[in-house]
Image (cartoon, rainbow, N blue to C red; front, side, top):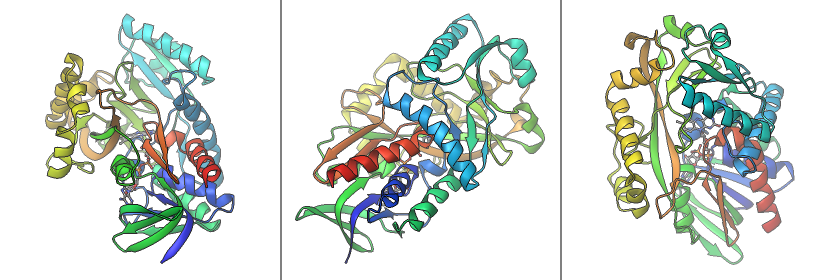
Length: 398
Ligand SMILES: Cc1cc2nc3c(=O)[nH]c(=O)nc-3n(C[C@H](O)[C@H](O)[C@H](O)COP(=O)(O)OP(=O)(O)OC[C@H]3O[C@@H](n4cnc5c(N)ncnc54)[C@H](O)[C@@H]3O)c2cc1C
């Protein structure tokens, strides 16, 4: 049996960033990942946007991590040759109410120290000739990044500093063994003095198996994307977002120019019938039962507003015309023929027993372990400071 000071479960951006920070300090750390490649779930199936911090409540951990994370990730990616396109984002308002909300975002940006300004429709047309709106918030610090290459770069650094990687090892559970842990995988056991659970969509399940007191549960929400056909990619030059609804955790269908030149449109947000259910035909009955038997889920969808949103999002999933209609709100010239189905990701949305969507990063500590229960979006943007924070916690508690 092999042993390590720290075992990190999960080879996404949070787990690998934590391992990289620990390895750098000389800690004997290993990442255990059930897939044979890194970043196969949320960290490789997202919009790849560095969110510079205008959309987050000032003074929160999320705001601090997003601002710092954007800055640090740009530097890191430049040093390590990871593709980044610092194209900025335009958050578009269609009416006076939305314009008022842009001013709220601008205030938040100022408080958070993120660069942003309100621009008029002419500026919008100059930057994005096909976008329609009366005003926009321009945040030049937003960028597009290749998230898989980023995670691989982090892993390369961690490995160079001595971190181990157990790929294709699925952790079934872990039990206390003296002061540490015996971590069981489908390919054998590992000893650890400390465990960092960064298992993303399964973090709450593993936390409970390890005896952590969490009452929250992950409810999986799939985000589906279309992409613009190659001859239509001129419809979006940078990134075009709708004005967000402050009550919802999801940003709404938006346009993102990726570092490979593709323009992706989405994601929507629809209940997934399994934690890794990437299509609307894919079902895990056990996991679906887990969601449907959770009172927090029913409390969440019991509000009129959430029911309306859920219905709308479901329609966008099953009917292309509904998705296209949402996208046309930002770019009216786009036609259904311009959109081709693309990939999907599943968000690990943590929901409290009283039906609240947990909007801040949430970490729970238990005996010789740290459980990352909510690496909520923009978890990719936040991953450098978040991983460092987790490494600090693990090192202090070792
Ligand atoms: C559709 C979508 C769009 C998004 N867009 C953005 C964006 O534009 N910008 C941004 O900053 N953030 C974005 N996010 C959020 C961001 O992707 C996540 O917050 C982040 O990737 C979470 O990383 P993670 O390491 O916690 O989880 P994951 O990437 O899911 O990693 C967890 C890992 O744990 C492994 N694992 C699970 N169970 C076990 C087990 N039992 N044994 C071993 N391994 C296990 C999994 O295989 C997985 O590799 C988006 C997310 C989604 C889904």
